[in-house]
Image (tube, rainbow, N blue to C red; front, top):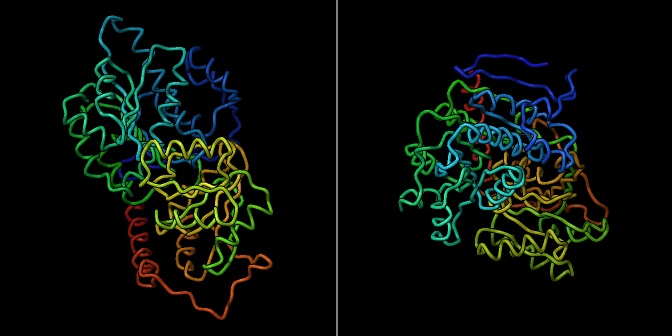
Length: 437
């Protein structure tokens, strides 16, 4: 069942979950070549996810799209596969001797996400002549320039380093035909609007633009008006929702006992991998130190670490050398850890939409996952914000031996004051009103 609704000169296609449709969609029915279908089969993909089934035909038809889907639902393949198909079709009609100039640009907010997307592009393109490069800061810009000079079809980049190449003259974006914004909401949260505007000035006006995000805010809708031409909005899940495969649990505990409770849960449940979220880099370092002192191998993961150190820590975590990875929101975007079972919100994020992204690190690709939030009274307003965004109550429960001391009164931070809550509620209401117009 699908519904066609006009809104703000944007054609909106609202889709129910794929399971609710009578037609069973297969990859072979999506007009993909055998070169791509063979890779899909080798990866063991049985049938497309909801976002893939809806986005792939729309992209192949040349439409601009604004797509929302929960993290872990295959949205990278949803834009990578059809764009590779368009490049394959183009190469068959072009002169083979013609030098390669990038025609696909994928923008990602973090180095980790950019690397992950480029890895997927390379894997899907293995049977083709399509080449790609990932561009991000913290590594040699000259080495990247050399690869660009050799010619590539697809560029996956973070905005800042991409502009560095444009300003140095080592990259020309005038041949870009397909522009993708992956996790566009995070780009705005990280303050990339100036960079986005600068990049847009370098791109041809005639292009196909695809905007993907797990959450939609009023700022995203404003950005879409600037980027997209008569787009389709594809929504396969309720906006800003968490996957049904994720069990969400909230434990009430005194703030000074959060680390103790976290270590207890890890030991009692014998978790082998736990991704722990904090709001600040210093807090991440402190949590990791406390966990190490308690006998649990843990390391912090945040922006103050060099690129080499971040890659080493992440590899150690994936290989099981580290049991707990304590990360900030910025560092954790784009992390794709196979079969990660547990995510812990040591602190509730100040930006409620980040909760959806955090817990979306588990329960991916049809697997089940668990998201645990450690809640103290100081978190009351933040929890209300989260519940408002996901439109779901998350009742608190006590764990025996870690019951909170109700005689104590937690301090209220400035960002979590009632005045701050009113400001956030007003902003949400104004954003919702704009979207309705």
